[in-house]
Length: 86
Image (cartoon, rainbow, N blue to C red; front, side):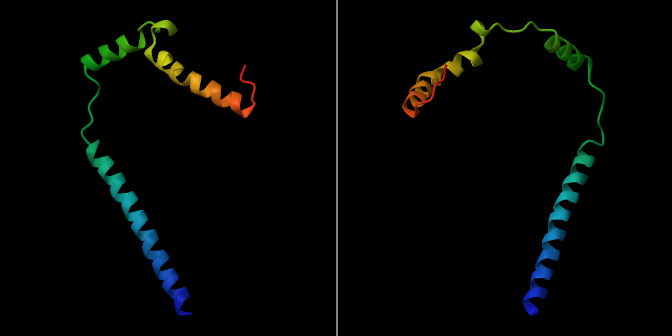
């Protein structure tokens, strides 16, 4: 019976510790946001500029270009596995 009491004691303290950590994190977030201010004109201008920018064409997009770096390796792997990748 003592192992059951030990287990319950451990579970109680583990629950309290996790709950305590969560409460402390929540209080830190509340305290850090206590003096929030509305966005400045500079931030609003940046948001407007960012929202109205034209989309980048795929030919000029570096991310799409880098996606092609591994295509050869993947195609070879699929061919070895006998899969049809087309």
